[in-house]
Length: 443
Image 1 (cartoon, rainbow, N blue to C red):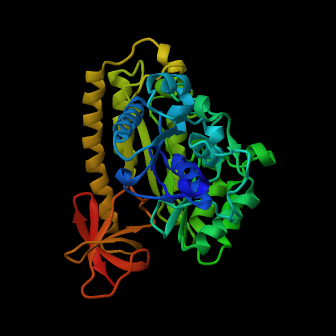
Image 2 (image 1 turned 135 degrees about the horizontal axis):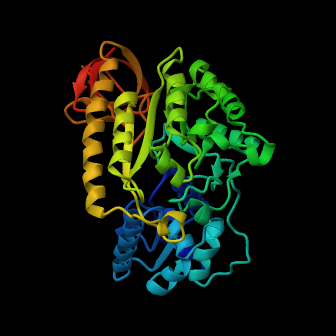
């Protein structure tokens, strides 16, 4: 096959799992497009299908396998080459190769940047020849709407929680140098991005490996200098590294969203210790008290695991009581997933699936009531929102600085004949609730 024949083909890339994985996929998509292969959003049109998988917990692995099987079926039609990348490919490399003979290439994480050569090799082209053209500073093909993007500031993790597979899959915590991040951020903003969402397994540890101490505050200050950047949002702040300096920066920096995503995982000291977390219930209460006492309101999102090995009724009641007292805005819950090669896998007193299901249902119902109560604080106030969608009946779906895309609530309003544009910012007066979402009037 010639290069020209290869360039007549299209690729479809599906990103699964977290937004850190999404960034990896965006970089692979750029490399293929920069080489000259066109992308398509319709897998039925693609000769090359790439599944960028997740393998964090059982449900994520099952989803990845389901999509691989679907793509294997597509090989009976248009699809010629099927490639599996991402965390499942890294964690179960040999198993994927043996278990799915229809997969043409299984790509480890360190080889993502070789995606062009991998595709060329599958079609019998010379992989020693560098004919990919000139790279630009951004080197990403965004899969998000044009007005926001994820900036992955580090990969891997050093925390080694007893239930987590990330250190095995992604390795030790590795920060991206600040100068490289600033260049990437400037290129994103130049392309039209107004909101940067900083992501890592633990953004609060950013820079410790490069500079000898965490440098997240310094990175935020440098990013804030970028003209036309509207919002900076932080995803996944490890609780014990949220310093007074970071809280002050969030409270005083106009470009930083008043929003903290703090995965806490549990509230029982016994369970936290068995999870190998570095926090306690009293430390959580102290941290949240500091956040509540800031001169501005800061929304808190967190995640918790139910059904961890050894979790008793008393442990579960401690978690419920903690949620009722703290009244965090947004909380996600996961059933404990027993993952091989983790310390928790062999722990005694594994909790029955039926008990996990019961507890998950209880705590989700509790948090929904708490969230509705917390949402009432916005009624009567005016908030600046970015427009995300316009429905046929004229209803607008917006998001303010207290909402992260795809996971939190929305603000609904009516255009009332006004000309509006997706990705632009508007003032909205909040007038009430619509379920767990807010509703208001466009000013």
